[in-house]
Length: 443
Ligand SMILES: [Zn+2]
Ligand SMILES: [Zn+2]
Image (cartoon, rainbow, N blue to C red; front, side):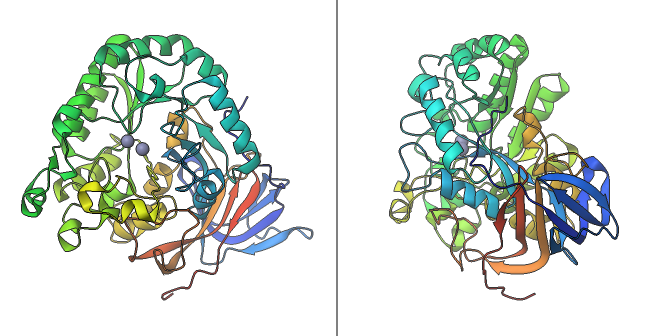
């Protein structure tokens, strides 16, 4: 039984002709035609013909397996002025994502089976792409009592997280890992020691000193990762570390992996492409997120982590906030940036185009989150459901110029010119996105 829900879409019948098909897992890296029949990949080859299907011209474009994001905030229930299941999954589809996993820090918190069930029902009416839901580790994210994990897994939770907050009490995480043995499900961790983060609003270092802002030190993240890796090792549990931001954290993960801990982790496009230097140019609240943008050295460590496999996947941590919430003094603004619509283009523009990372690695990391969440990984293979994204790598566009599919516009990339436009997204066999009339800056 799938834990993913979405609004049914008519199964696609299309022939994508002449695109450069790149799927490292399926061993594809060539100019090919892909025929989709009744929502399934029916044939992959050259000079395919089919009289009764729509033909999409893929000439000069790239076709990838659709992306999967294991970490998004869809703000439903309770904060629909920021995002809802429809707008959030439209944003996902526009970014080439064919499945997303939503965090439970909503109001109310997703911490009981009835709340989870009604959310899943809503997704079956409203979600454009398949959505999975995480449940909270502790009731109300209060860090005091564990949720009914087995019941939540039965109701279809992907796993558990108190994202937005750490599981501060070590004993409680230990207990959660003991229940995990019975209930299953990944435990995803937002690592931050509140006694070290304090009232920090940016990375603690040169930039925070120059701006006179309170800092969040890297050790706030890395010390809790080390602690939780030790607990997971002791209990034989499986943990996933969210939004890695610092060199020390990459080192802590590498050490834990070397010791055989069942630990995986993610990095976000913003931490991979931006640093706190950006704040010196403009103290823009769209650049305020948790964990904060850190230094160039940290960014290089994250890039190396992707290359070596210490970092398992790319996740956006898409965190929409309404304009009036972000248009306040920097110290008071909520933390978070949207990310679904810019994920591929940001990483492609900043890391692939300059030759820092190979395109195939980035494509793989953009869907690698699926397996970590025990979800099927999209692959371009005959017989598999069509989960595809067609992208024009040459097309450049200005972020935000034509608006967003997301209800919120707090993109940390706003105003930047990026390369790589999503043209078509096919998720779970149905066409869920066709390029809007974005004005093209230059081609
Ligand atoms: Zn978080
Ligand atoms: Zn988050």
